[in-house]
Length: 102
Length: 474
Image (cartoon, rainbow over all chains, first blue to last red):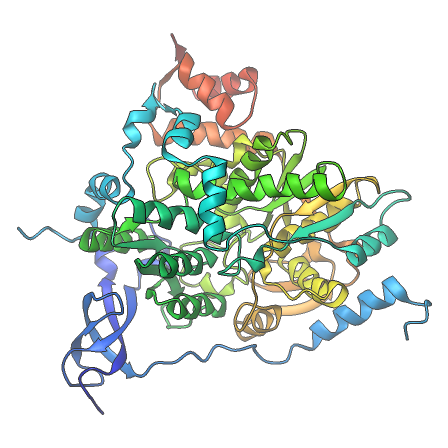
């Protein structure tokens, strides 16, 4: 998909390959690169997956692989956790049971 | 001239980059082999209490409400032995502009950056401090970059950290997100060098001094309201700045009898730099992964000498388990009508247990709350834990195995504050001073510094040094 110049986008880059990383790392972290995600305005028209440059909100020019246009947040309040309901009911029972609060 | 940007090259320029980005020459304050003049650094590079109150007041920071948690106090008295159950209070720091006490630290740091003529500020933080710096930068008209450790190698992010990124962007900051690893510091140095911005570190004298207003307010509010100082103040402990600043503020108010308790969430066995462990943690701060290493070696921070020195002020250090903090978070909402984020609730869980050791006319206070919202709330945090294979169950929190399950107490009487031996912490602090500086001998001046820096006796410090074959010279 072609993304127009000036679009607000999210890019990804490898900061350090596994070989370039700090020598003092746990085994699992040692095996993977240090990756980075940054958002900015796309400086030239490009396709998703291409190497691009963006201008960030503070005006820095950063290079990376184009991931998505118009990135948005979708973190939320999670799925229903039934255990949470029990806590309030139990606390009220302990604190106020038998005091006409039913 | 193109400067080399490899990990080693940047790290070797660390001292030079820091000096330019913090504006403090720490070497001026250093003497002996390990010592530095902490009070002098706080005095000469920090601000007076009055100046800080003014700086913070101008941006709407501070003077947060002090709330008595009457229902939680009543609940603890139902469980406590006869006559026990101190009054529990909480300082509602969530009502600061950016939603946490970190606004106090950021207000000072960003004000200082502006005064010194920096065009922008950078902070390396995945927590509330990022939002606080971004909020203050917006008010002061400075640019702001926040660097976060946010994702594991599969690209899965901690919902709480993603929410902080959103909040930073809402204030106009640029957010740089990284995968797990201590080389966040490398990226941080590289960007300080590239931009020439101010290092709004959490650990500068101005940042720590910013929290002194919190301790001072606590003493004043209690004197006005109940006519005496609180008996115990519980501070959630990670990097140590919250506890240090609060304790210093209390001392400045003359409230030097108050016992200072640090509280952290126990994340035993989960490695802070492990890619695989990253999303098995249900807490992103206020936990032992920061609390213990920063207490026993404060100078591991992003400035040469950390102004956060918790062992100087800490009387007790207790641990609570994840399930207990989640339980208390829900209790705070259900019994007190306060929906708040996890950070202060670590202290609240500890305070709930500690109150039961204290007499009913005594006072224990939790000195912070934080904002809550999508991602950073008991519901998404427990839901995220389940998605990552962590079992959620009711039972005895003693049986919690960090990274495998979260045990919600089946009864509030099972909530405990587990003591860490202070002598162990002090011993390991002295040992770290010795090993990090390759010491074979220390001067009398150094010894006096070590004693003060971990609030210990000459006898104890000398015995640890002897056991490490370190000589004390004139």
